[in-house]
Figure 1 (tube, rainbow, N blue to C red):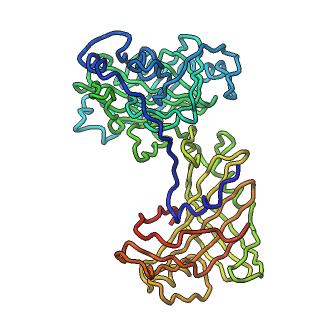
Figure 2: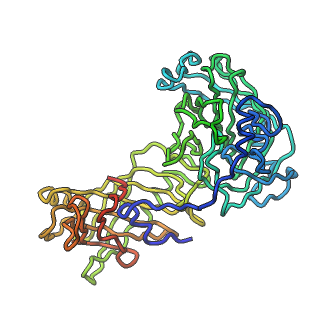
Figure 3: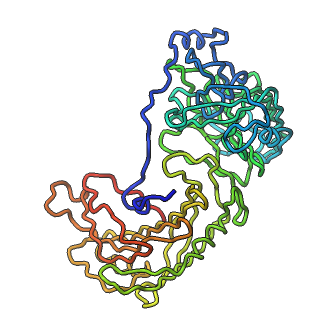
Length: 480
């Protein structure tokens, strides 16, 4: 797979996304009302019994929730050693999750207060033990991955709008204990894995399992398991369903684990829950063939490159040396969305050309993206000077020492954009003049004309860019 060239300039022209218009399943509102009023039966939600979200079925939809992301699935029993077409067997998953797992637990100071959480938080840290017992036959949870989305009325732990992958599920009994006495609860639920090295659960512990819980609250648990250990979070959520049959959004995290090596989930727009799917890697630590140090080494091995200045046919040798002060990488284990982002880290670039026209440093961001063999690395830096007086310092401070004409401009920006794919580095370094939109009506602060004043590119022709953001939101910026 080769990423398109417009992807290189996403820092300038804005973020890209994807969506699929699939209507969410509609609950039986009469049944919802009966269940909410206290009725019991196989059609009502049951915390911790069938499905890791505590639903025996989805109010007459005819499919079962088999995992924590809230996706309906067709469920079929699976032999432990059978080939499910996912690249791993159910037996390998059983061996990964079974038994006792221990991890440090960090209670958060912000969890005390209006939530009533202070009643159940005796200390700031504890040791957590999670014991998992497989209680039934493995399951193949089949879904239409191109169309199926997590419905908007999905229960706690779900990410509405996320795509629903086919996975292997395991019925399990989970006991959670903390050495400070706060947690001691057992639940039967369904664990699920899309990848053989990462399994995840999401469930709620009802108030009768937590005598000190605030009135009307249950504890929503997100738990992930990898060969490196446990990760997850705890949060309060309402025990009541709303009129549409949806659970209340989970509140802010009360605690997370591990205590120190925890990657906080990114809260994308519309994400209401504490979805934990990133593993913390020390710089040299490798998982799925990826480490921060190795990604830096790949960038540096691609230097020097042969670069061309716009308007000139004379090639220049451009040296690009990357360093990073980051001490870890948070690696995404369930990449979602069009770009399949796996991680991101900050770096410093030392760049120079053999003719001396470029010589300096840039602070930038490096994104790690899924690709066929090696991950693709997208590198971006964006700097802007709002006034003409600040432009020379901006340009020279970015390591560009060319004599440029800023006539007609009221500001400027410097953009570095590069992509490493198949061990080939291509990209550009550009000075963009920012002036008034000529011949276009509208407030001046909503219309900016972007004009390239200087461009150095390598690995291909200059990349297209959007010349005007008239009436549109300003672009997202990465790096500095």
